[in-house]
Image (cartoon, rainbow, N blue to C red; front, side, top):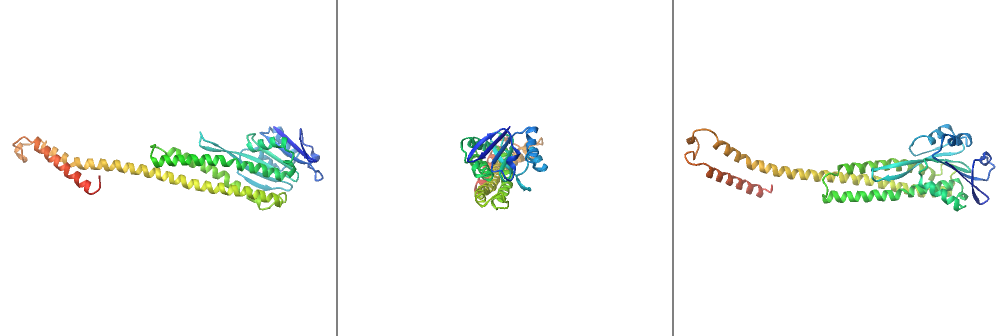
Amino acid sequence: MVSIFLHQNGGTTRADEVNPAWLTPESDITLWVDLAAPTPEEGRLLSDVFHFHPLSVEDALSAIHHPKIEAYESYLYLILHGIDFQEDEHWFATRDVDFFLGRNYLVTVHDGRSRSIAELREICDRNEHVLGEGPAGLLHRIVDSMVDNYRPEIEGLEQHMNELEDQVILGRRENFVRDILALKRDLSSLRRVVIPQRDAVGRLARREFPTIDDEMAFRFRDVYDQLVRLSEEATMFQDRVTGILEAHLSTISNRLNLVMKVLTVMSTIFLPLTVLTGMWGMNVPLPAFPGGETPQFWWVAACMVAISGVMLVLFWRKGWL
């Protein structure tokens, strides 16, 4: 689906198609063309009307790419990612949005599920000043909205981490390894999105490109600061998850040590008892052993009880029990 917004003389209207005259240097029109899940015919708008470089057109119409920014002769090509945390499946689904920023136009290409662009389309229909700030101002609005959408997902991830940490400390469950590894996978996905995106937006904030003036650079600097905080939180979260995993493994190891201690004490106690019962249970002439001339059960049993008692007292005094 192609949506075309046209701003001229303080008013914003929609158009059915792009007039090549709007793209000339003499044009005073601000144009926003949004391609949501474009068909091959709609995708030819990028090459046939805007005459973008074939490599950037190929990237915009193909699968997901890493965030990046490239400067061409008459426009900037920018790839950024939006995220939606899929709590049931434990992963961050990335949705890339491609931007073509020119002197008086902005072209966006995405898969049709971008929340930020959907909100801006609705605002453009109601507010005529959105496109009045120029294509760079519109780009900032979209990018700022995409970054703002990260915050609820990060907070949900942090809440899940806190709950998992409490369960590990309190020992309410036995097996946390799968949940912890799923959480580590979520954080790895988050870092793969945020860090390259931070670097791309940082170039916009440093005024490297003539299409970004000083005022827009200051705005992008604020977005850059938010991405820096998100990347720092992602690093901090990874350290916390590593600590949770180590605490869980330590708890399992302590429980195993307790079990092994009990089993070792039992084995140590029964070892001399087994020797006694084995020796006096052999099929040999009775006079061969002390007490062989009399019934053996009660005094052998008394020896076994005495030995067990002495060993238990000894273990207790040494702090092994």
